[in-house]
Length: 411
Image (tube, rainbow, N blue to C red; front, top):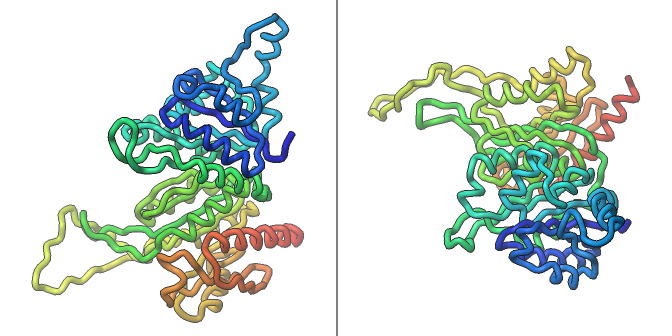
């Protein structure tokens, strides 16, 4: 088996012609490509196209013709193909294929192969905008992401049906680059389930106003993406943000601190590591008016109550259960950054706190870079310096795994 052997599943949509370009892009990156086409795909592109590009047989049906021996061999070919390839990518993944994958239907070679395949699965959906946005399709995508599959969301733009919106197959070069990163990634989190919180919360003041903060969610989403690409099943509890969800991550959207607390406690038992990057609002209005508060010339005073301290509650729960889950908190500070991180480490019963200075404009909130220092329960202070949030995410995970190993040795 080649180290970069991949199955390219081609679904039946107008974007099927782009799958030929994807095959070429992958081969230029060193992949050996085995193409499997659905019957519908063959209505758009002929198998000969892929055979000429790859120099390999293209699988087009479940049962081949010929002698009894040939038919018998073809009937178990899906097992052989599944075992001999490292990754399965389906592009375009039509609404029909997403539905059949999600529900375990196996009525042709590609869907049967999918059930037999045990490696990473990458799905690149392409379809009409209304079909993509339909609740059934979105539920199927959520189901597949929950299995740890990697979903590359469709691009937006003009579609063959004459409309414009999300539904275009991502550019072949983008899909190929994603697969290249996937097969060369580290696998040190395989089999793990990690809970990440990200973004701000919004605490209503009336039906149209709320309290929030400047968190963009970029650091939390970078942590979720890094963990997923290293093999973890990631549950991302996210406040309202304006960025796309990482591929292969289960997103649990929330608005308020109370909703975030409920989601975190619900998913806590299944997770071996908890990474709390969310910037939870510190205060909320206990009694929210049912109607919009009208502006007047009078001063307005608000009596606010503290929101639940989710990090501290999780720390106490892990300590009570003695479950060994690793708890990582984040501290966004404007002064005394390391001292505040150490205080938070003790007060919240964390194993590690990631401290970042948000006083400047170049790092911290709403930008792509951070400058962080780690403080740990092993009494270490580790300077990670300044880098993009995605680069720092991997460095934080590296240190988290070292810390967990050290703490387990001490037990």
